[in-house]
Image (cartoon, rainbow, N blue to C red; front, side, top):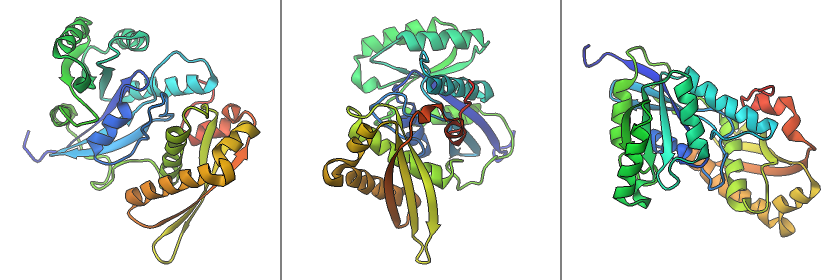
Length: 301
């Protein structure tokens, strides 16, 4: 193979909720394409992050955390995660070094074994938080599962070990033409990206008060003559009491949500953003098939 021959492939990042998948994806791509929150299960649909490493184009699928589903939305998220793993050329399993092999991770390993995958790439994350002897013990235990071809020790937060992982993945993807333009970092449309950034602010600012019964939709996207963009979004909640929480006293909370989301959107889109947020009550939005289609999830999963 000559050095200039192009390579391209899909890598699914799978793992239990809140092990750092979205943080790792953003670190690999070099900019934010997936929301990051201390609250678990914040990634609801598969997100493609696209990275160029030498002659290789590596397309990452950031899947929702795999866990035991209880609601329809949970089932759809888990189905999307396993769908991403099945479709990918390579599967990268992320394990939280501090949590080790918990119930969710154990179930994922069992499913990977059942699917016939015996060349899974393992990344043990948050290694900066755990003693070396504990890491070695965890690594040896996981290696004994018999499905991992390679094991990496990384910190998605600090970037330690991530370049070595990236170089390995670039070498691993198959030979073939690039599938996306060189300057494209994600297949997520701007309207959806904007909604995800606002949804992230909901989690960051209201993770104690607001349950998962909230979603954000970009209703209008208007290009302005001066190069800026006007974005109008609706935050849907299920009850009037939740609407009051999002609005805050004299509108203070929604103002804070909008200001923080706008600043981040301006960094991502590299232009001025005029962001307008509204809050509406929609009973049982989690049972609306249209919402699932918007998120790229299967309502009937």
